[in-house]
Length: 185
Ligand code: IMP
Ligand code: MG
Image 1 (cartoon, rainbow, N blue to C red):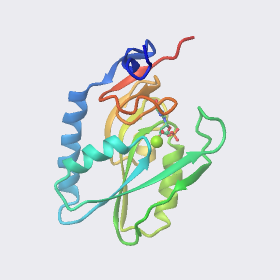
Image 2 (tube, rainbow, N blue to C red; image 1 turned 180 degrees about the horizontal axis):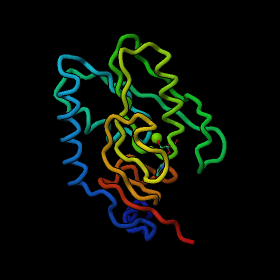
Image 3 (cartoon, protein in one colour; image 1 turned 180 degrees about the vertical axis):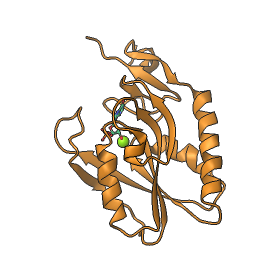
């Protein structure tokens, strides 16, 4: 069978770590919280490509304010599987951040090194405020408080995950839930 047709049947794909229903409910709550926190303002949502594209689409629609959206893409130097902390901007923002209320929208925070770099980089552009909304935070790495994560969807176990924007080798971003992924030994 063509692997395009059977991609959901890959035995490496585990059970949902976060279900569609859980994602839907949590995003609705985050949307209400952000709507209240930014009342009267027009926050600029900055999505980090590619992983955050699905979350961004749902989160933006859960916020009842005149939000604007922009995207940037970063890639970390060094080994493919471990974040080195040295980050390169592959696609920069189109919009000016001066005096804007900027909300970084991330898929998952692992070591937090990518986020640390992004924070520093975006802060230097003179926003009125800079906060972070991450769908997932991997347990046992950095503390939420250390990273200054204002909004978090779910804290998840250490396993590698795919789906809802997250990939392995660019695949599975279109799965509607977040699932563990264990490649064959
Ligand atoms: P950090 O710099 O270690 O926090 O790495 C965060 C980035 O690594 C995320 O934005 C993802 O792009 C990627 N990443 C980390 N964990 C996973 C995972 O379990 N699945 C897919 N991508 C991941
Ligand atoms: Mg990412």
